[in-house]
Each structure stands twice: as C-alpha cells, then as structure tokens.
Image (tube, rainbow, N blue to C red; front, side, top):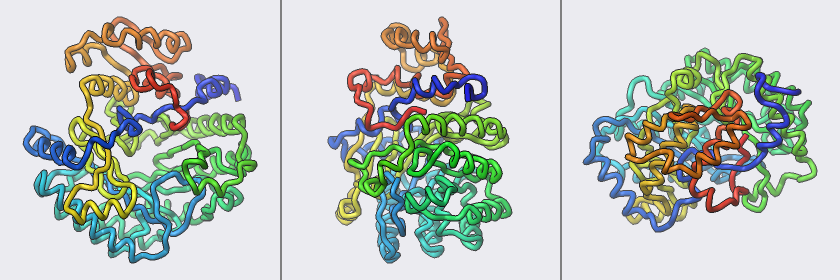
Length: 464
C-alpha cells in the first residue's frame, strides 16, 4: 500500500521506525531521581492546598490495581500474578491509608473530574471490593458531574452482571484489553478470549449507557502476520468501539521477564510490523475513525475526537484526555502522579509500599521538581503533542523568554522536518502538518533537552 489518507507512505513509516518518548510527561519518567522523596511530595500537596489551584483546578485520580489471575507473556506492566483474592482485601486497606495521608494534606472534598483504574487487572477486584474502593474515594473526594470515570477491563473477568455493577458505581467509560482476536496469537501470548465474548460485552456496555468503549490492540506479537492482523482489523471495525488504542509490541525480554516465554522466532519481521501498522492506519481511517494522535483513534462524535477538533486535547500519564490540565493524585503501588511543578512515583513492590504506609509515610520512592527550563519545554512539547500548533508569543508571554533566541538550536533542527513536510514554521508559529501529525513525537523530540544530551532511546517505544 503506497499511502494512508494520502499522507503517510510505507517509506515514511520505515524512516521513522525509531524509538522515542511518549510524552505523557515532560521530563519523562526515566529522568526521575531518588533524591525527590515523601517529604518533597508532602510539601507539594501543602502548596496546592494553600494556592489558587485548591479552589479552581479539579483533580485527576489514578488507582493502580496490580493483580492478575494469569500472566500475559507480552506484558510490561507492574503486576502481581495470583489467584488468591485475599491479597486484594489487604491492598484496599493500604489504599485507604494512602488516601488518608492525602486528605490530611489537602483536606477532604477536593473536586475530581477524572478517575482511571488501571493495572494489572482492576476487575480482579470482586464486586464488593469495587464498591468498597469507590465508596472510600467518594467519602474523601467530590466527583464532578460530567467527569470521565474509566476502568480497564479484562474481558475474561467480566460479564453483563458485572457491567451493571460498574455502571452503578459511576464508571462511564470502559477499556477492553483485546490485543488480537486470532486464536493462534492468543495462545502464543497466553491470553485466550473468544471474539464472541468481547462482542457480547461491548454490546452489553452500549445497552447500559456507557459513554465510551475503548479497545486496546497490539501489533508485532508472536504468530501475527499482516494477513492475520487484517482479520482482527476487520473484526474491530465491525465491533466499532468508540475509541481504539493501537500499540506496537516492544520485545525486551532482558527487562521484562514474562516476555522470555515468547519464542523470538515466532515474532513478525520489522517489515511485517510496518505493513501491519500501515494497514491499520488505512483500515481505521477508511472506517471513519479520527486519528487523534500517536496510537489513538476515535469516532468523530467521541469526546476525544471533538476535543482534538476544538484544540482542547491534553495529555497526562494515562495518555490523551479531554480534561483540562490538572494535578494528578496517583494511588497504589508503582503509580506516577503530578502535583504542581513536581512528578512522583510510588514504590514498585508491595513490601516497600506497605512498609512506608505502616510508618505513616507517603510511599514515594522517586520523583522530580521541575526547573524553569523544564516548565518552558513542557509547555512547548505539550502544545505540539496536543494541539499540533504552537504560537511563539504564548510561550514568550507565559515564561518571559525570546522564543527564537531561547530555542535557536531547536529552530535549526526543525528545518529538516520542514523539508520533509512534517511542519510549517513561520515568523509566529510552528504548525504540524497532516502528515506530521502521524509522527508528532518526532517533532516534540526536537525540544527535549534530555534527549539532546542522551541519544540512547532503546528504553522508549517506537514513535509510530
């Protein structure tokens, strides 16, 4: 296939088959330092409570549920494989302690406009445990009407009755982990779930009034081929979820032990992966989906597509969002949050996480207090990633810098991207082109000071 929507050729996909940050934050999480500790985090919370943000800016909440009943071999998430559901009851008790520490710093009743339960498998929790968790959060925070309240769902752990419970608890968005409908691929990654099961759940979700249903897909898995993935793409377009997230599988067995169970010889070639991506872009755009950015697609009437059209997209640690730029309180093991001009991450093991809370301390093990340069560059990178358009004057007024002088080296680097048709640069602005939007991470990377001094990108995913 020569082009996608007239702008993306297979040649371009091969040219930009490189690694780079996803920019769910800037600086990226690999820049966090252990010198940032629980005391620094508590200070950031105190500053929020005494500042204007306490009254005017809503919060986003992320809760990490690490448990899964079975191991998916491709997984690179922080998870705990267990069939002992008693572990989740203990975990909820510690989540409650962590929430208590937060309310001691910022008070009870802060407004929340976005909640996301991720994992692991949040639906590992039983219905009574989900009720307990949501009741605990609602006791301590005020959930705004019209907010986005989402949960990641393992289709193997949910039926129509459980969907009733999720709707009753206030969730209005669901994300189903599908990855691939091909039975042979499912066996190879140890995640067998019949397509009929997913179709029934999505139909039941719509009947129960969930505002948006997302489906996650992964290309580059073992035993996949462009032809087999075409069949999955056809099934997904028939399913017609409101949103689709399409991720490239990164095989890093030296970093992620579960991936060592994948036979390297069964992985598709680089050329096959490029073909799968190219066909996916063409299929989804041809089926009427809007390419929101990076690996996200949405139907034109979905709020994410509307936010893109209206220039209201934002990014946080969960990816693209329609919610305004706001502080993110992250709860649970390994979760990453943002308060003011700081980022922070919780302990990555249950032992460390529980130990900190037993001692009455936030379980923060690393983070970052952003410098002035970080803040300037974050504003530039987020404008590129979310709006695809940057007015120099907006940065100059907000940060009191001469844009072209401050970013002289970066403006030179943009020339190559302009020559390739990725951006249009004039005296007042940078505009990402329709073609460039498919490679927007490459544009943002130009302004990443840390990448300028460290060109090692193997730790990042491919930029498209």
